[in-house]
Length: 233
Image (cartoon, rainbow, N blue to C red; front, side, top):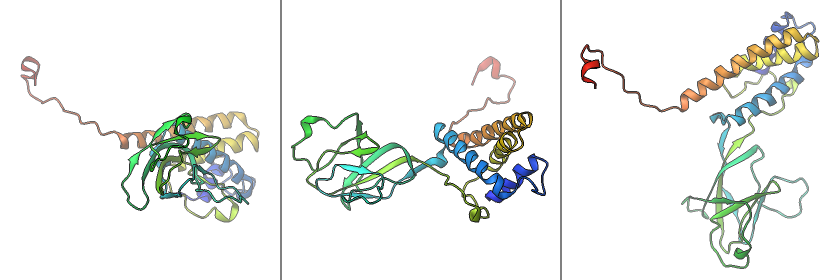
């Protein structure tokens, strides 16, 4: 697993500056962060499993109907969404503390006819204004969220020697960071285009490795015998 410093070294080498006289850590780091955001979006768009996460159990008190992102200085204490949540894939609910999880159904809105009814489980949910909306329950329930997460955080200079906790990203990030540096520091669009091409190849290879790992296709091979074409299997 690479460190940001190693990727910066690769980007500098792509610009024929292995001594990093121009492409220093400080100069290259903003472009590495751009490449990270680009990679994050590519992985999210292709649902690469490394972005899949399940939340911790979220306890929902009686009467609470909203789960939202943390808000600084908020007066009303509400259950909070994971800060790295990008898109929800599935919600699960259980009676508080029972770990008896059942799937919930997503709706566009919480139906008006549910308001005022006495229920003890949610069954449905809606996503509105970047918040999970729930029917009002008269029981304490737990919720878990399966979601696509934001993998990468903005890297600061003191963190460049800390390993990324991900594999198969070095080649893409090195080429993509080098391409951004070529385009915006070196102002060399020809080299930038060439490095972008290398980055695309590396990205396709990285996502192909992940896709192969998700395939569980059983293949029945043909037997090697002369009579196969005449008799079949």
